[in-house]
Length: 454
Image (cartoon, rainbow, N blue to C red; front, side, top):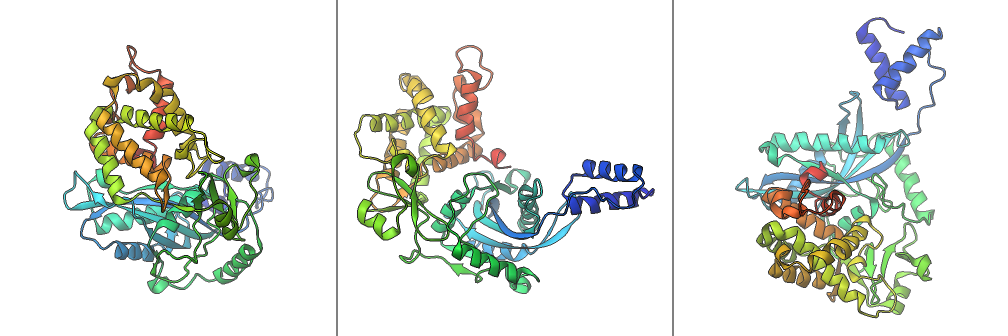
């Protein structure tokens, strides 16, 4: 074992890179090898295999309002070619798809002349993905590079600093399919790194042959339909030749596109006896189908205005509105599909489950206490959300979008104290809700605040 402290540190970091161990564990393994009189680390586990994968995350940053969105996406994508891991000093090559999202891009009230930009980053790299913590570390590496570049080019106060939110595969694909523009790493790095071509070819062959189930909700999963650096600066427009990733049929049953073969599976289809179908059969037997799409700018503005107008009754008003919506569905007989229409866009997600549970528990309780909610806000929220689920052309997923809009209002108006009344504040011993109830409400409604995303 090297005796010089610098040499020892280099040896430890080399072992970290080889094995994926953290600093302390690598140092311990090095010491154990020295005590055993060995010059090498024969007992070290084999190095994980290197594979090509992608991790998606939303990148939110504050930029000048006059900035061209497509130019921002392309400029950022062009920067994400060489990543450096701060914890180990390791450098590796990467590529990125940067997608302009329709959400966000709203004026920042504390920074005149600026907007909050929302971008989806698909971060590609050849890494030892089986190594513990590698998915999260790659997101951090790409986020660090994105943050450094944005702040150097568009400096803002700390309150406006960028944040990142890792996404599950399903949510990332839904955002990608609803976007209109995607930029790919270009310039001097438009070509793929050395050694990537055979990995991409193998990936394409695997995807063409595979018929796999989506891999669930966990963060850090692959986007199976994508390969890195397709063509640069791709303008995305709606096309009948590109199937939506999610659709809702006339029975309010949600369906998602399977990976590989272009067919659709139903949410909880096994339990409901619903078989896999191709798009034409699904349209013929259960249509008309509505693709799941993001909310319009007008609807986002209406929801935010209702919440801002409700002030400290915003949380209560949201829960009461949700209660009225699920209560209406509970009294309606409908053939098949999700029990509640507000769940059909992404049935089974934790947001949808929490939303309905809170509607029936806290929302039902608050509905009997007129002083705890703002009737005008409730009526407006019910109007907008009903439009999301009953519109003739598209279906807007409710749970995650509503939480996102509520989180934006909370960020912009002063946090939880500004959007929830006294009984919903933590630590209220007299007249307050139990602590676990307050935490459950916050966990859902604040799930996409800047603090939660960070």
